[in-house]
Image 1: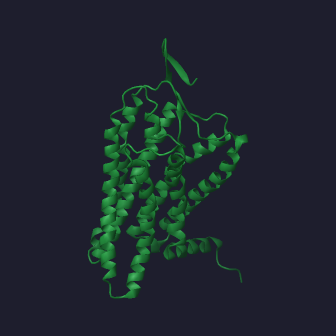
Image 2: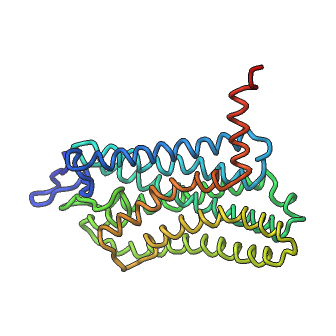
Image 3: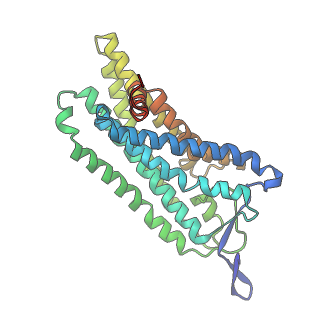
Length: 317
């Protein structure tokens, strides 16, 4: 049952309906097949990157450690939303339970914040490597990298918890239609049949989280670019730029779409643009990340080639 009677003239919502997903015979399959292929690529690409970094001795550096963490997080980040989208595209039931919706919001945002923190740690790593290379080996030791990762996870999974607990206490009645491709704060809060003015505080917290990470990363890379431009060797400048280019691409893709979605405050978009922006950081960014970190990275390509060559074994005589 979607609705439970709370009183004579009020019903309480226990399930939400995703109104944007077409039925299978109305074109759902046209979205299902590309999305399934994209999800398969995201899982495979990130899993290969993670395994290669764990097995290849040449990649035992702080930079690749953080890339492996990011790949691991990306697998779970996409798994919180895309499998449910795939199910909704082929199922006649376009619903999600209230508990399921809260869990999806919690894990999606927790993993997203954790990824943002890891990207920040990666920017700090590149800053120290390029701007303070002599001290880099003594600062970015394995223990410190693990501490940064643990802190990122702690930050991600604790920051969003009070908000989810608050939303869980709200009554939902009347309309149960979510006009989005996954459960998110604004679409869900708009269905609450009580005062949700505290959402302004929630928006402010999101803004501080996003802007803090953005400023640290932006300032780090501005300083890095200044140092690189002062390098006397053209080869040294090219190598330093190529190392940081992948990180900058991921940073701009991730924070650009997130900022459009969560730094708008009272600005409203059409359903089309809301959905497009959501798809950019739920589907597009995770799809492009393995390409950026592997196909655009010579060390990673060489390591992948070594791994597959090793498993093929030596050529027969």
